[in-house]
Image (cartoon, rainbow, N blue to C red):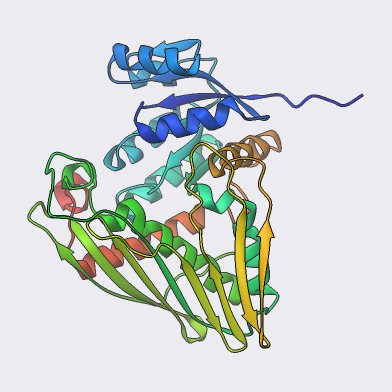
Length: 352
């Protein structure tokens, strides 16, 4: 007789668009169940709970953390609130899946990791693409030397266009952590670090140098930006992001014996599974590696958390984000923002 796996009991903290994506994933999950939602307004919590059939709803984040039925919390607030509520969730004894970026800077990320360590709870930064089997296959192909020695990486994630800017939007408000680097530029940085690490025989690698530039608009956030990351072994990564122009959101890796392309590296579809596809050109031949997927990246992400918790682990295994991987990513983002001239309230000494 097959033994049933105990379902991880989830609470979602905040009710924005990304919270809905995770709720949808949990509704189809075999490892987790959404039992509670918390918002800053009871009406918002009620509306969210009604839509996703959530039995427990709270009009304060504190009440969600005090709910004994909740074992794990998905922190889905705007970026500047990630540190506070991840730390408070850990202190309440809850396992934590925090939406990317983990924090506003490396110093905040250090505090989150320290809180998880002190309270013995699981912590993971929610880069959902890292949990999709396509990403594991990509790392395997790099480690296997399919394209020889890795020399250059190109990765981009951007969207938008036109001249219309809403200063009150979270994307353009510095107080809400706006800007392309923090919202989606963190993806190509994390991917480049994963690929460089695989090429060097490690789970990830941190750049030894970061040079960058960006257009800082009238609201004080980067509207488009690019950076060059140099790794050990002279591996060079070119990364780009944007809120105001459409980029070709792909990943390409160039090696001594060929090239590799990932047409859909970020696997962002929130409603239906995305089959992975990696195209390798080497030895005069081109071959497409198809990677089957029965669920969305968000559902894979929920499963990674639940299985780690069930195994008694406090962090995930690579290619999902480990604590040190997240801390290294935050340091690289700090360097890119500094080069582009983007400063947030959380970076100023008064905010420390």
